[in-house]
Length: 220
Image (cartoon, rainbow, N blue to C red):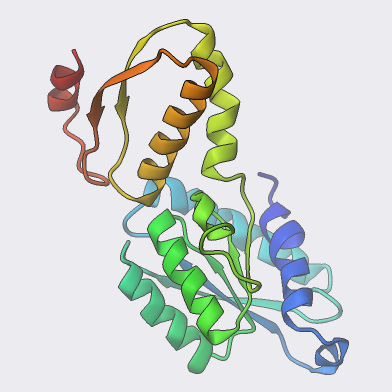
């Protein structure tokens, strides 16, 4: 991801849509963006992510901002918990008066924020969660996604997997929304290309609590 891609290609146009009608752009002051993510729970992924949007924010504001207004990001940690994500989202909307919300690395948290956006009628850009439900089963007019979905990413891998002509498969996935939807998509797509395929073992350890030795023994 380029430095400016997250904000310039994603959040900035989202801000324009979120602040319609055009009259809203006559306001002075910054465009306030509420950013919610699992920084403490997923530092390996989200430390670089945060550095990226901080660099993009600096560059965009140095260039004059968006439609003559600077961007201001107010970031909050959701603790890897959907309930906490909704709580901080409410705080950002009611107390900080943000114009839109972005973030949600984990899929189950993304779904909670999707529902919050629908209830509060506030624009939400799901920057990281992959579950298809974000814009399909649970989709709404206020929620948009930045990344390719679970189904799309799985569909890119399945043709290669099917080309191996292996009948018996073991599946290992984290036991939460993303892992469950990825496993379901993989099985369905493999069946469509290779009807005789068998899924003989499934291991679904809790998110962040995989015991690699036990899993390897189970699928051996």
